[in-house]
Amino acid sequence: MSNPMKDVYAGLQEKLDAAGNHLKKATAELQSVSKETEAELRSKLAAAKAKAAEMKADAKTTQAKLQELAEAKKAEVEEQVTEWKAKRQTDKLEKRAERAEEYAETSVAVALASAAEAEEAILEALAARMDADNA
Figure 1 (cartoon, one colour):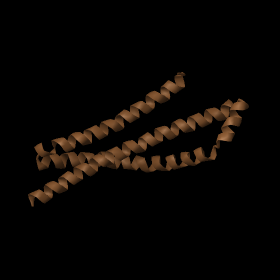
Figure 2 (cartoon, one colour):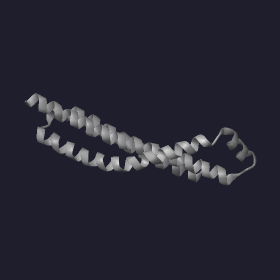
Figure 3 (cartoon, rainbow, N blue to C red):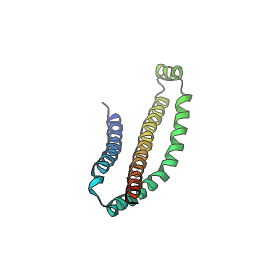
Figure 4 (cartoon, rainbow, N blue to C red):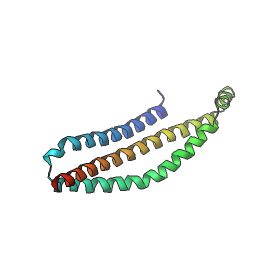
């Protein structure tokens, strides 16, 4: 595996691990909720809302970037790529690889923001249930 490929792989793996950790944290929140007080739950909800708000702001920009990259990806037809390979147009192939890498990284960033939003939604649902049960 070439060094640039190793770097891309390592970067994507790190981001995927972060998204997985968010989901694991949300699962742990669900499992521990019965042992928590309302104040503890509200505190976790406030922290999750702050984190999700921060990530949502970034996600809007990221989503727009993802759309732009998707359009560029559609514009590259397979015939064109085959021609670039045959003519050894490495500059075009390099740009294509960079766009594909950026698309993958951006997709993972969107998934990470979605995981944070899911964590917030879970905590909101639990808080709402606690409110209903305590009424």
